[in-house]
Amino acid sequence: MEIRFDASSSIGAVNQYEWDLDGDGDYDVTASEPVLKHTYAHEFEGEMILRVSNMVGSSHVLKTPVHVSTMPMPQPLAAPRNVQVAVLSTVDGVSEIRVTWESEDPAAYSWAVAINGFPAGRVERSARSVNVTDIRREADVLVEILGVTQDMALGLRAGTTLPAAK
Image 1 (cartoon, rainbow, N blue to C red):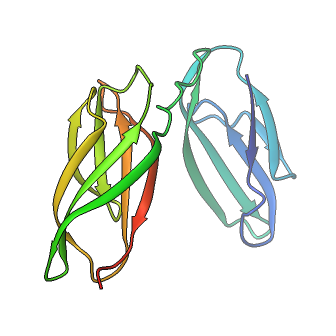
Image 2: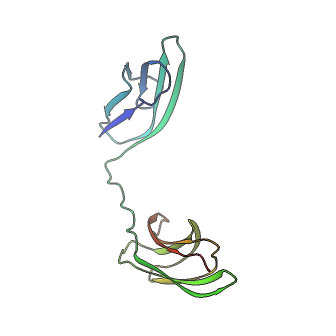
Image 3: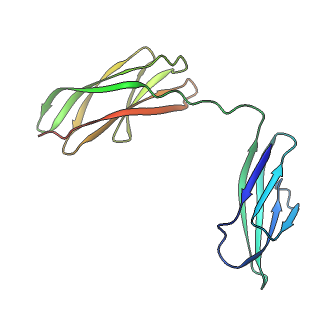
């Protein structure tokens, strides 16, 4: 698999790039250009080390992880569709809401609810609605639903905005 390493955002007058492509401490390639393409012949899990130097001999080292695999990248759970929020009650700007959504993604082990980006709870995989209490509505509130796999990987989010209480 070919990987493109790009050090063109290096700061200063760099005149030499030394690339240790397998993290063994031996620099495999020395170049004057900041971009290097390298093909890993086999799966690799390790780090790439880059040493950049200028004309007066100063150098800096960067290490970055490299993961090369023949396994396909897992696809995230699909975002739920048709996320809707209904206000059940509001007292002094604090509401109880009912969130509903649709999904047929069989990989969803459970569903998570987020309020303004913060986790607010989880429900079982068969659920397509949940009541959430104590929603402060001084400002608009972002309500999101996302699937969760059995190994706790998070799916794509979908949501809607609940307007501030008047």
